[in-house]
Amino acid sequence: MSHITLIVPELYFLLLVVALMIQSCGTREWKPDVEKWLPFGAGLGFFVSIVAYGSQGYLFWDVYKVDMMSQFFKIVIAFGFYVVVLNASRKKTISDEKRTDYYMLLGFSTFGLMLLASCVELITIYLALELASYSMYAIIPLRAKSKGAAEAGVKYILFGAVATALALYGLSYIMASQHTTYIAELAGKNWHFADNPMAVAGLCLFLGGMFFKLALFPFHFWCPDVYQGASNETAAFVATMPKMGAIVVLVRMATFLKPGLEVTTLLAVLGACSMTFGNLSALVQTDLKRLLGFSSVAHAGYIMVGLVSGTPEGLAAAAFYALAYLVMNLLVFWIISRVAVDGRNLKLHDLNGLYKKAPVLAFSLAAGAFALVGLPPTMGFMGKFFLITSAWGHGYNWLVIVLVLNSALAIYYYLGLFRHAFTEDTASDSSPVPDNGWFASAGAGMLAAAVLLAGIIPAPLFNFAVAAGKSLFGIVAVGGGH
Image (cartoon, rainbow, N blue to C red):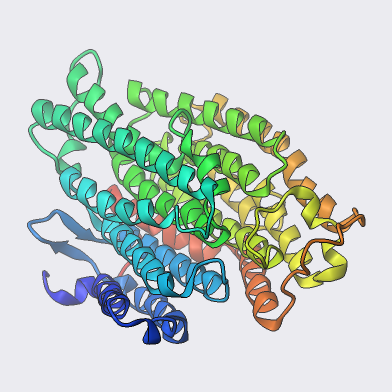
């Protein structure tokens, strides 16, 4: 089955990007109108992705596979793009003449991530990753008269170039030693270091490119600086969307990372280091976005727990946690963007007394903070629960224990957000009043409801993820697919 209906979501996003490109070429008079139609366009893209979720098949000489896993991540990516567009649509931190270009670059990056979700061949993965990355290099410095944003952009480009070069170098090693770049064929190859050191070294280098996107230790250097330097709504995109692309590639490649292999143990060790380093560094941060930057380093470590288990349930847990991570972070960044109406970077003390000024935002922030810690009844709790249960008993019990200890460590700084918003009253009078309008409250309330609802009733989403995980291993999921 190789007809065009398999790639309807990708074609839709391509049309959206082309429309933005045409508008960005226009005169200044009709440029600012982009925000009148784009939120509806992005919302329709989310709907199109949901409708297309039952599609299955191969395209383009089998380098492009439409399956349950790709459709799961396309829905997640389309939802993320919709929220990011809504978040940025009312902000005035980007000058009017650059707004269409800004959305066009966001759209290009999202389109690249959509393609990445279905790529099952290493060269295609590399090209899709580059398509998703290039626009990020231009978006990050877009912050009016900010030297910090320019610095963040330069750092992201330099680190990105190094990670890309490593991935390409690793790819050449894999091709030379395993004579194929198709993931399905690589799954049947030998990945023991003693038998095939060149292939294992190449795989480690190739995965390094994915770890850069995921901000996994020690590829995390760019992360806190870029979050801090980029504008709030850009940081919301950078903090969530590129990570979805990295996770879907790692989930696909984890099908041949059996427990006990040297590469698998390396992933486990990097995961443990990432959790511990991220949480310890976040403890001492006062800048809110920098704190979230180190927190995302820790969350990258948590996702490794699902990947090293070598089971469909482990991959499903990693996919579910990716979705939870996206929704939790978009919620917190939504609130940051609404509190910092002038676009400034928030310090922790800027949240003081938020429950008086904007009760809906304060409650939503509490839901987001509890979810990021992993407290019930939130999505974050269920995500960690699935990770722990999938990995226990598969040779990496020590990693599960590290995850539990790190979750306890994270309580301190996440609940610091709650403490400032609800128990501190000494708010500074000079800072502008948070945006307390219906749009701000409705967006925060709906994201908070999603975080809580998916924590209370996780079964539909997790069963979808399990069916996707089983499809990767060639197990027919009962009642899962079409």
